[in-house]
Length: 175
Image 1 (tube, rainbow, N blue to C red):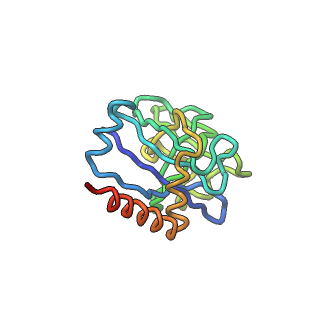
Image 2 (cartoon, rainbow, N blue to C red):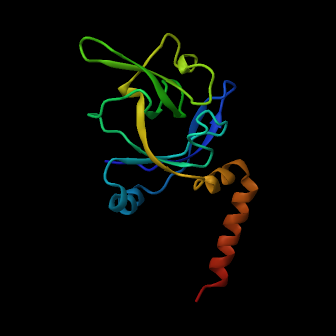
Image 3 (cartoon, helix red, strand yellow):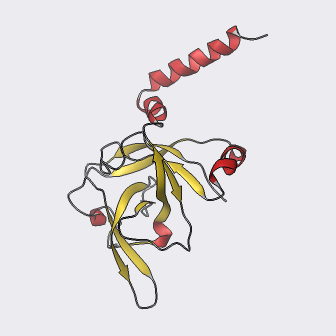
């Protein structure tokens, strides 16, 4: 099963990149349109408003993510993860991996453009992330394609103007 998530970004005082869902297509749309092109385990998301992942990704870039449980997490990989108590996912790079003798893997993340790792972002008492926290892993991107979504969220008047013009276009071109 796969999901579609086109997201704009917000950031907190620490300059952390967060994803914010802003367009929720009907449930059938994602299966109908993207299954043909992307396969069954792809997710779409957008990185950073504040630039914590620059120069790798910029605000408005559209990320293609996978989340295959069987794939091992590696240092240097870009992951989208959720922290308990926060609804907005974060897009950052895996900095360190800690593997226990029983095979459990924990990892630490950091934004490319941030000075410190993400331990300050994790919930109180949490020093590492686990696989269950991962929403997806970046496999590719399309630059700036999500900027329209961001403009509509950041400037509501722009959104209403676009909707008005689309409605007017439909009324004028009726048969």
